Length: 347
Image (cartoon, rainbow, N blue to C red; front, side, top):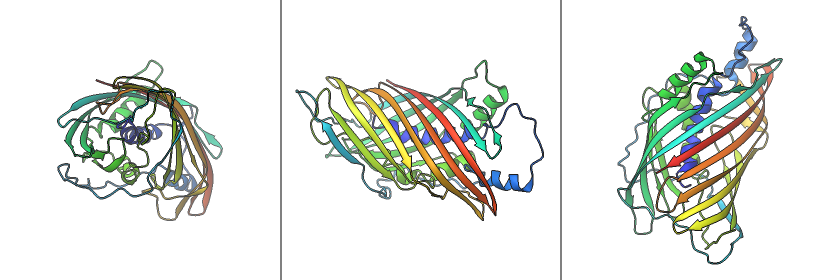
């Protein structure tokens, strides 16, 4: 639970960029692009970008810059049945744990009169290692993580070109690593990560804006003691997620607890008000106005309070977004819908 959301956000952002670049109409014959079409395509997020130098991050550094933004608000709706206990993570220095996550994405896009059919991307499997490097007297602990492998699973109904393109994009993030300092309740105190030098520039830019949002997308436990049947909500204002400000609301239900093993049901929603998007890499003179964005999803998690990675977790989410793109006077409407699913396994 504690490690799932920040890392999931990073991996989802990476995979979404890789997938978006391949979400073009598969049946339409290519036609020469007009100057207007080229300008609008360049302005539409995510945007191509020149290579960025990899940021130097010392994973052995004792302290990073504090995270910005408001702390997520936690509200207990129902404390649940007796007996009750405070949910706390019991990290141990030197503890290592691998994580395996399989992610699926499907999407459709409409831009002006053009439209792409719903495209189901092949499943992507990601392997990650984690290690607790220190634990303070207050229970705060520091862990490091590294993405050790990525595999795009070819399917019978998937075009080989799409599989290879995705494999190429995702291969560039293998070696991504970072660290986080987290409280025993799952509150993120510090967070930092770096991509390998060969990571695609577009993915580098997409992830730059996530550093200061790590605190808001974490999932802390409530301060109060809770029992089976407990329900709590976590509301977080995310001020800048790759140029987009949104509000995230998540609700949790404690459906079972046995010793250190906890089972949760989760529902999550995100909504963004109309705004000017300030995405990285936007060409000069281009402006993207978000008209609407909403997403929602449900899932369930089984975790052990003595481990970083859930024993098992799965979630399904859907998202819809509408934008108005203005590229040097050429305007166009763009709409996108996306379905996302993931399953996670720890040991």
